[in-house]
Image 1 (cartoon, helix red, strand yellow):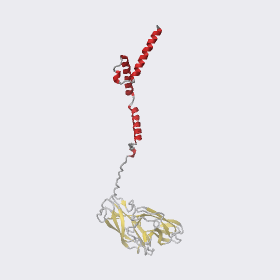
Image 2 (tube, helix red, strand yellow; image 1 turned 90 degrees about the vertical axis):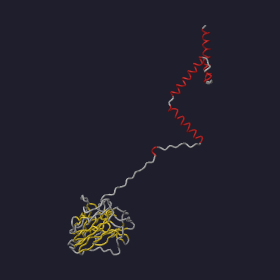
Image 3 (cartoon, helix red, strand yellow; image 1 turned 120 degrees about the vertical axis):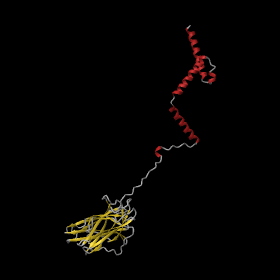
Image 4 (cartoon, helix red, strand yellow; image 1 turned 60 degrees about the horizontal axis):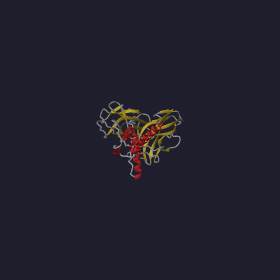
Length: 340
């Protein structure tokens, strides 16, 4: 009796398995005609398939599709689409223009009393500069020419400008001075001053003064012979050391030092411009001519130093040097000392 039950169970199990296998090869329309048992098994399989499909995340399917798509493109030779990274997207640079300063001035020429003009002691003279307003503000009589440093030569502390000077216009500015009574070389520095009392001068930073430079009495006079002043080529004396009439012991060493700014329109080429002794007392210790250490562009500065020695006798001494390009003197500078 137990053997018969086992045999029946085995037959039923085999029938179920056989029907399940047949479901894998039949279409959906075929499964609709199966027995209730087969239909139940088929519904179970469909439910499991639906659950698996719903449970599969879309992120898992996406890479597969992408890889297949790329593989297909590679096989067929179809160009792959290119993607520009965000970091390579061009940017537009916005450049803002520099505002023109309110007060700026350019030196154009010495109308009267050029450098090293010689006067007798106590002579009264008028120094006149030709200047251009290169700023954005109009000058008026509230602007003035003021004494800044050096020797005032008995001049006034300030002189009002003659009238309105619009940006770009040229004006002649004058001051009445008097030559000192002692022999020697004298230099006075002047600047312009706005109505609020702020001083401004020439050069890139509007910091350099204009000046008057004279000799008095028997002091050697600089007389350019074969040299001439070239149009558009000029310089500005930013500073000089030692100060005028600085006292030294006889025979003592010192450095003659000038800071010069190129305020012209062309670069000073070191292969063409020389720094050389011009006239006056020969207080230099070594060479009388040197090459520039480097090119000097417009609105740039250069420092020039000469190893010097004070004369052995007491008195006032002046030494004059200059920048020379061929037969053209670009700039002249001097140093004046007193020996005890």
